[in-house]
Length: 252
Image (cartoon, rainbow, N blue to C red; front, side):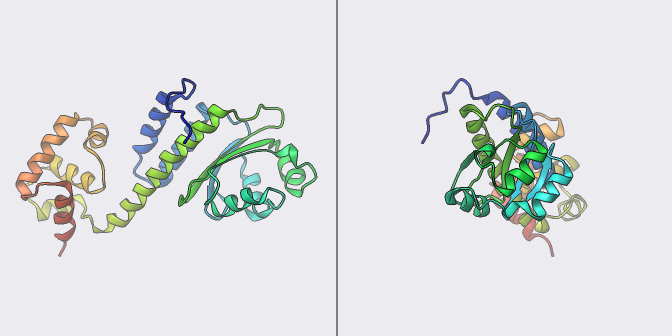
């Protein structure tokens, strides 16, 4: 494993702040959009960037231009035959290669470069693929813009790992959400709980930590933990797991 944890060039603080801002979004698409747009301040990419789905097509993009993205999705996404086989498999399957950095002028006589890249000034691309992830982040620079350096490559890998973790959590939330009663239902079923405790219960069942609930509600972490303890006592449970089980099993 590469030892980059002590690399002074990695913008750890900025990465942490971006991940925290994006991670506060409940909606998956809002999270992805905020993360994608925030990457610009960490890794400048003058031709734009986007998220590739598991099918190799853009599911979200910015700066690339709608027409270019549509052309790519309709036709050019499968025109990577000139790329070395290891890369081509990763692009299609997102399963073998973790990082791809490509200078498109290396392939001047291909249809993809001559008909797609040159008209939109797409000179180089940086893509990070993670096994099992539903999305891969890709960033683009123009032909006259410098190539992505090692620090930027490592930064994208770190952000992509965070993105994959959050996507996994969002998937769990989506699976769990149908079983979680809404606030009014919770109030009817558990009348001893206060309105604030109902809010804490609902967000806890959605997988939020006390810290994140505190940030979204404007209260201190200690206040949220105190409210959660009160809920445990009222509902006669000892852990978050028992709380979630009681809430989700209480629908008749």
